[in-house]
Image: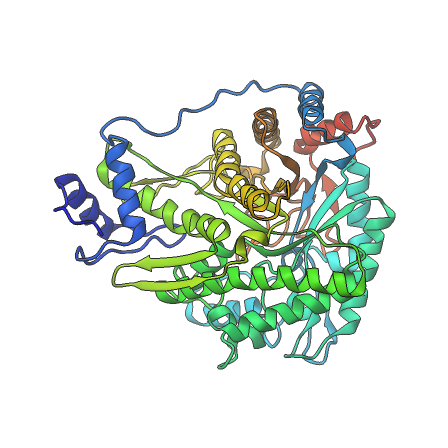
Length: 547
């Protein structure tokens, strides 16, 4: 325990905590009596870094190389790691809820108009939120989205025409299990057809099992309460086993959760997604801990199924969102402390869990959740990195930017290299060392850039090209520095539903979708040229027409 009296800097730092709210749920500290690990680490880091000096990482200057030259650099960097170009993944990401546009009734019947409240927790929450919101501030329901559920052949052909070799997509749990223990075999068979169409085109599938969209019965059941209980953990594992039973032969990489910290904080601290709870740090800690436990249990359950049935061993990982926080004013003690505590909550908790098996979520007077799962360090074959931008704390909380349509993101390739380094040093290397020491196994855990992209203001094509030039250069530099990276899937294949935003407000897609046209036509954007040329140069393909 910290025995000495806090210094003036410590007191100033602690007092400053009372006026901010973190993008991923930064806590309010109302008592100085006890210190949480986050506070202790943040204060020590703040003092040791001499916060009155500029301590933000230096920005890296990138040459904006043309795509063919950068593709050649990537091939040379991979050759030094004995990775053949055909084994490196270059593709696109989507999530089922954001693109499918087809829902399901309790009896398993499909609903062409989109997800409905009786089965889809997101749809139910949007309905309940809109009943309380004033006109002009209502959330947009998902509706038909991109109708990907019916038009997957067309969309997969776009991926093939682009020259890409990978697609990251997510199952919608409510389609598979619209009622508790009532399996919708029709949906699973539809997924089989979809994924066979990918296989026929030589496109590898990265399949996410949970991307922010649980079923209504799971989240709103009075006994299960989603991931607030261990019953929720058990139900998730059973769902994953059913999906694996039907789809194991089609999937190249399995992902249990898309950004567990994002789901926990946004759902139970910020109130930005179902169940829409605000300022409940205790539940946030419980849910995050149960999400991580569900990952571990799913990992070993699927491995056991494969052994028992003599199926090919699955490759299983989890996606870690990185929004490393920095002080807007490095000379301000409060900004520095806030950024350090925020990083501790959303990053250190997960790093520690996967390297030690110990989970601790502790905020004085607000939350205390602790558990130990000794097998956690052995539950990853790969790690997915979701990265858009670093965050900057200043007066009034997290600073907004005007460089992209997502006002908390800016063009920040330096942060991508730092994110790769942090995951490599704080997760990959310690886990690999444990395998080596405890099992004499030289396990290699690759990092995949599973989500990264931009929604430019006005969907500007030149901004998208600039973004890709800079971020691809950062990716290549990270590989040249020896970090084992297995590929990247860009967010997103096409413009899609962005979680309550009006259609067209945030256009992340490389293919433009005309949401005003009932036919929802897709058109390759001129801003996709850099990525397409990069892909064709890397795989030594002949460029095709703009399709």
